Image 1 (tube, rainbow, N blue to C red):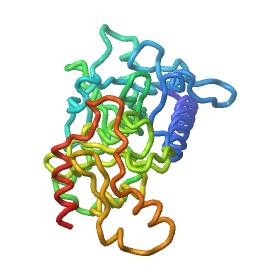
Image 2 (image 1 turned 45 degrees about the vertical axis):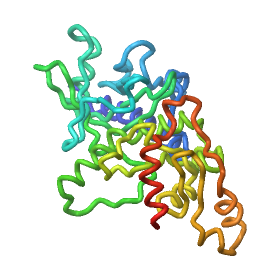
Image 3 (image 1 turned 180 degrees about the horizontal axis):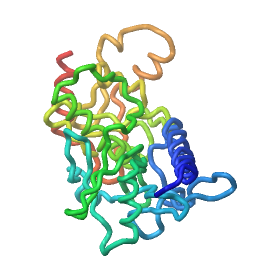
Length: 302
């Protein structure tokens, strides 16, 4: 049984880890290099790695329970996000390590004591995204745990939860909580953290934009349905003030082109007319032409 002193020390480490990751997210660092995760953070003069060097479950000796778990999205299959996910409860299923005892004991302790952990997802070689705080539920008969994303913070969202959400709303929110960090990481990696329209390279000012929104039946969180866009071009794209043709050219609504205003409109919007879209190095990551065609039809009709 853990003492109050042990629980307090454990909580201090987790809070420091969450704070460090949150600061990075607020600064636009949506991905974490493996070197950073291995080096970790410093707390009270001690270095605390955020992941294990060789295992998916990280159990620091000083902690009562698991600090983090790590999974990988195979680059050849990430487009579909084939995780074992329950969209209603917002959980990811994660298997025990092979064998008895060892890493599994602290993972089960995290479940028993409801200790919040970090869920790292590999989105490209050596690069990971993070979801937290994630809570563990033990399923010893199946030799699995369930990682709850229900309380995961979604950074950069404008939507406010309804007081009485319906089932479809709950499922959509859970899908976002499970997949949004990985989707952003994949898109930012594909576009090398530059806006596809204007090439702005400040990650804190960039969004991972959907071509077809997550409410749409074709709005899956795959790289080919994503664009790295600065916040002004993301907003213009969503509102059909800026369109992108299936041939990867940028178009601006004629009314906006005729408008006379300040330098932001002139240089930030109007001069993007007929600009070639910045495309990822890998053709598999390029925006899907059929999705762009659907979105462009909305733009043309606006």
